[in-house]
Length: 402
Image 1 (cartoon, rainbow, N blue to C red):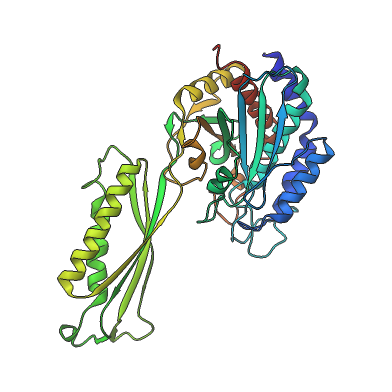
Image 2: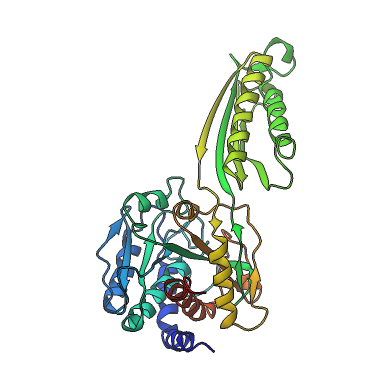
């Protein structure tokens, strides 16, 4: 086995109890997007105990550990690794001694694990730095789950300055523990949201719908047309999905046609041009339906994270290097998700590799992301730390000659 990886894995195993303790502390003390002040400070304090400084700050609570190899030169590659820190407004319903202590909040998407893995990566790289020729930045980001995403503000504040490539990882409860998935090209979808309000001049009695405007019928007509766009205006071979997430009409009166109906949802695509097309069609449908039924239709768009676009040459190299140090059958081809991930903003700026690590070893760790019962197999943490550190080193030192 590769001697560098052997050294990294051995040290990661020595740190395993420390890493699990950190993950459990974070799991017990979740903080929502843009409120990660205590999380940020705690991780920085733990890094400081290991002799790692985190002087640079970004996006309110974001920060980085910058490590320069002892043999690096001006021409050395600069590789970054990103972790997210925020939790979700979801009650942690697990029965374990590290469940969330904050009512209604929980790390139900694994960001406590991502933060812990990054901590381990920084520690291993720092301990090995005298032997390395590359330059490394491990950084922690707030607000991955928020509509006001942390990634663009991290980029604004300079986290990608002089960076040649960026890496990231996400735990995957649909994949067996210890297996890694790498996707060439799109790994997630881009996401946009819409809210539509169909409004008449007044309410109408259900016995006499012809005397007014039936906003429920009109909204239903519009919703049907929106659902029909996928596969009619979009190429069926290019994944796209439109879903309605909210639909509100009326109060308690069953004999009143409400004055307005409010509905909204998301559009998920893998190509910006497809998103632009669908947004334009939604506008056109709203205008034509408003004119047809003589009602007022208000439309508001929200633009979310772009698709994560993995750099294909970098993924190929990553797969090659992981296979060098892994058992046969543990490095898998990834499947594109239609979920969103604001790591996509980084992939728009520099070559990137976003990896999935299997975290399921049975029913308790197979609950889906964002489930109130979500948990992971903690045995994956040390090995994942070693593999991510190994990839960082290889991309800094071997990519130009592989």
